[in-house]
Length: 404
Image (cartoon, rainbow, N blue to C red):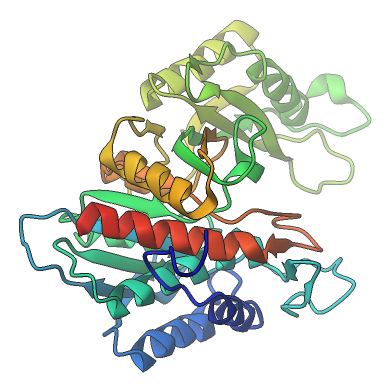
């Protein structure tokens, strides 16, 4: 599509320059302050009236941070409001990089750096889309709410959780999250792609209580370590749920810890097990499955079944699916045809993220569309620069179509 044919003029060079600047600012989860300040200042420089939205979790993590939000107000209070969501944090910097992990180096259409794909590429896309809409001569009837959030990569997704708990999503009607999609899709798809849902997740936290004894006489004790290992193996045999869109659930033991005694039968062990679920599998179902496994094993150890401690009982990654016939999906499909000249692939996310909070907890029709790359969460992470620009253009045109 030529520049003359495009409905909006997205500045590709500015988009990639913005991305590079953000990649060069380290922002591991719980350490996003410098990037939040940059995002605020960038929006403020264009008179887009950003605000800090404070995020506090004093009990478990002792975290204090700030989301950055901004709103374009439409002309019609009855028109829908579109939420644009992207996270500012990355995983902790990986040690195996052979260059500066925050270099922002560009080579062969790839921009390198920790978080470049997950998800500073998507963050740059929504920021530029927001700016482009604000500067456009096209009048919007509905609002656009931009949310650059903290702690998506951390243990609890505190940034988007706080948006929901503080009511900032209450007046929203639909959401776009610009996470990299195809690389974590249930099936092998390529961009341009729309991901219309995601599995949910629970994290079992078992305490196994055995009986200590001298390690030279293990028959006199009950090894919590051995019994926890048996439990871990048995849990992987649970018959998980299946869904026509989301695929199958999954179970993966993640951690087994029985302390550091050098010559004693372990009397305590802690076992943590990941359980990805699909629609139709509730917390009660997940607990009942574990109870049945424990009962069938008839271990000598005692087993306490819990879920990972969370700052609030409402913090859960529930599964969700957005209807293919929803107007948000239609607008993104049409925008993809307009920008990329092809029909977007449709898929579903394999894991969890802030989109679960929006699609399940907030009840918003939510679509994931983001630039792809490779090596996310690892050394050598990169994002395709042309996809960053393409996603920016698609989101801009879809928003104008929905709200114009």
